[in-house]
Image 1 (cartoon, helix red, strand yellow):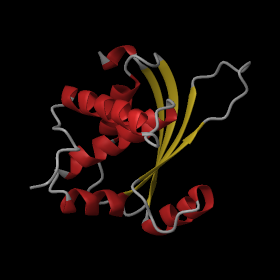
Image 2 (image 1 turned 30 degrees about the vertical axis):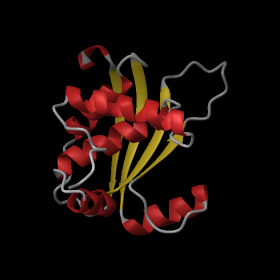
Image 3 (image 1 turned 90 degrees about the vertical axis):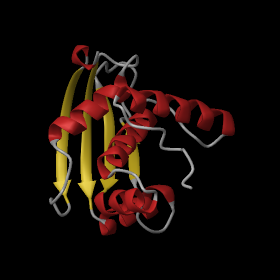
Image 4 (image 1 turned 180 degrees about the vertical axis):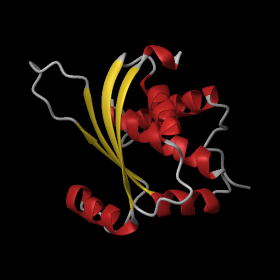
Length: 156
């Protein structure tokens, strides 16, 4: 299934490196998100600390504080047929804190953030309710292929 997708991943670690998922896991999660959308892609994932996440969040979204994942789609002219998808910036501390607060396995939450961010790079969004429902349903289905339960199930 994921083996048919050619992915070139540039993984940048700009945060405390302890307890991070492996590069193979990032590749698996990215390829999972690309299923049915791309057969070839180039993607950068930068793992950042809270300071860098907050800087990027204020600069590009005008929102203060760090966030879990930021997506920066490649902005290429249509005549350039390159497989460049874009960049993700994922904040290690926020992902770990959210996993703990939401009573989720940390690796499951990492997988969700990579899939969520990659879907944004593919053009999915969750601003309007109908778009959010479509994106969440796709995330749930993709995570299920990885034996990860619905991340939107409320905490009891």
